[in-house]
Length: 558
Image (cartoon, rainbow, N blue to C red):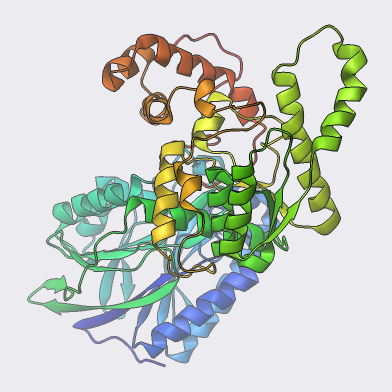
């Protein structure tokens, strides 16, 4: 184990780990392993992530007295570990104050005891966050004293406002430390850097930002920890999407604290981030919930092909079961492409013809449908026959059904309740169709780090280039029912992520107003469907669900 820090030099380890909400004993062991690695690397202090001992976000678990009591017991155990002369630990945990408040806390553990603590001051209550529901805000913190160093700890949201950093500077802080549970979205990286740079500019102090890397229900946390110098320049970044214990050395000279710059790799392309988010989100959802694997319908189309590729990269081919369920309208191309996808991925592929189910439903309903022409009802029966088939296999053998719909479809209701919408999880739920094409091309040309699937292409090129179709009637194409996806996705992004009205979306998109009005109407009418959709990976800044909470019943016209 390492000894105490010198008065002029501090080696700190950024602990970017994958905690599991509610697994307090398991999280304790993860932190112990990280502390041992930090000691091996010569660190005197370990900086863990927000609520690392309980996992983040714990939501209403925090309201249980038994949960809070167990958290306190685990803290005592970890604190006792620090009596060995090794690294101290700054760790996040929910904590009851002496006054009885329930707080999101960061505790400094050293020399076998709790050496200091701070409580989160700014509690986020927007988007996916509702911390005011379960926590009480703490006062503006004072620096924590660790072996001759004055450390200013700002818990996650506290970095996004100037007042907490100002209080820490007034108290003599020398380094700003920011433990985080910051969910990934496509706009988050620059926002984090901008807020960190603002705090550094105001204070003149270096800043250490450490974030967890895990999937938790619909949220995915990308890690992407970093160190910023007092001049606002990046000194070090930690690779996203994987666990790491990364040391950084601070030196004090002439009253200033700094750390040497390390090479900063370029950021990954957007398609890579989307893909890695889907892989991590699915892997943790399936594994942490104890499913043996997943089963999905492999149609020969791009959505199911990309979903299958993500599943294989996340879980391994042996845990992914694909099923082709042809109808009389399924093309030979689709049969060939589904088989080719399964071969490339190395997955099991079974074929179950839904023709008999269609005939049975037709005969059963014929007396009641007499005199009415076939319409979308018969199309939806096909989708529901497929959903029923997958759910039956899931019930019998245990794998979770993976649904394959994308955000464009979910936005406008181009999906069938109890049909293609059925399932336990959806990796494409927050990915627009145009992004599905881009990510599929990226995966065909790249093998992501940590992926369990094959190198090389994971789907035939024809899957990417052919016109999308639900194949529920002869010669059907998606664009028979929807605007071209490039136009649809542009309008949807304006209406959803940018929250524009019809007039503004028309002006900014340059598309005809009737098209924008139609998309708006479809978007509002499909809200009741989305309420019944499975959870899925959050990718955008405004995902359906906890991010975007529109009433099902309303009369606002846009």
